[in-house]
Amino acid sequence: MLRGDCSIRTEGYGFSPEEIAACAQRQGLLAIEIELSASATCDCHTCRIGTLQQVLSRDELRQLVRQAKSLGCRRVILIDVEGNVPDLEQIIDCCRDDELSVELFTTRIQLNSDFLRDREVFVSLEISDLGELSNLASNVQAIRFAATSANVGQIPNAWRWARSNNIECQVQIITPATSAGESATCLAPPSAKELFETLGRIDREEFNRTWPTSSSLIGRSCKRHLYACHVTPCGTIHACVGITIPLGNIRSEGLRDILVLSEVLENIRGFDAKVKEPCRTCSKSTDCYGCRGAAYQLTGDYLAADSLCWKNEGIQTESLPAIAADFIPHGPSIRLIDRLTAIGERTAVAEFTVPTDSLWVDESGVLDETSAIEIIAQGFAASHGFHRWAHEAADQQGLLLGIKDLKIDRPARTGEKLTVYLRKVARFGDFGLVEADIRHEDGALFASGQLKVWRPSEEMKAMIS
Image (cartoon, rainbow, N blue to C red):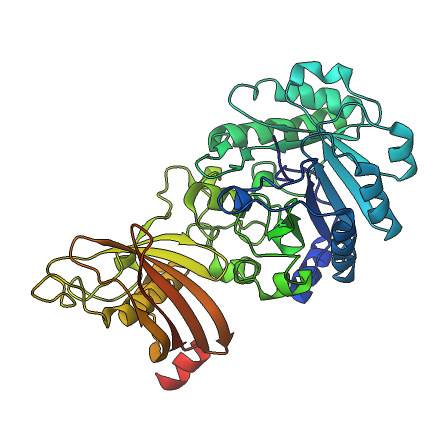
């Protein structure tokens, strides 16, 4: 199932570069993607690894749409994955009542053509078998399908058929994982490059249609994160369907606050300075920052180089889990973080196995309680360094200014693994508050506390250097 809009639209997404740039500048929206469900409870990625939540009610959906409109949204993309949402027509009416255009992504073959035509709904039908295109309903404006090694040879003829019948093709070359333990599936970069070059040639030579972006680059330049977001059935906000990091939930926060305060979106909006090599200095970087969803699905890092891009083939891409020593200057005898395992929305997870030769361990093999402060500080430094250039990570500066609510519980001994759960609580200019729990493998608490830290901006570094 294609649970969101991760498709490639060869003729753009309906918004000009100027409109997208202005939207990113004001931290607003031009489109919102809402995943629907016929079930009472949500089975999104966040719910599957946590507590199942109730799906949004129709009233909650109406409020969400109105919040999106207040942020400049002009288009609502409704994702009817199961093809049987009972109040779909009422939800469409909610969107149209607020004068928003509607795209419907569905697996449902039997649709009310008159209703959809009257509401001017753009219908995109998910196709699993490219050999059955002739059976499509007449009210379909687009078809969506995942390109795989098994069907890639069928796609050029399917493309010709769709063009001849005035139907758009929306091709997806990566299908994000939908639950913990799954892996994303994707088309190999050389095959994807060859496919889109073939489709571009078909459009030019047979249908006199030109694409706004080079055919070899088209699959990497969606820029969705600059003007859109994805909403799961329970109201959890994601940057896109591929970046399954919860940014917040509309039941507890306003949509504007979620989008404006998101560190993930802040980093992606600053892609020209944040995205990692070789994407950062690529000659195509003015038009493309790589597929951030693909980067996250394949590496755990939404700022990593896009390893599905044909230009990056064979290049080693940094991924999680990552060795903490690459991001902090501490030597082995005082280092208290071994690995970074996850980076989220103002959160991070790190691990540390207590060594026998650490300066923090006493003669009986017990880890000094005061090490908890340093563990939190080093975990924060490693998570910050992970999103910087390699030479910047090794040279980062900062000070620990204070600690609050430090609690020490069960001691740790040599050989035991500790997991550090970090949360950035607040930021005031160069100052920040970080809190953390440090837990044993059985979940028991070793320590918890809150640190006040100072990390100089580039302007401040220039002043004090």
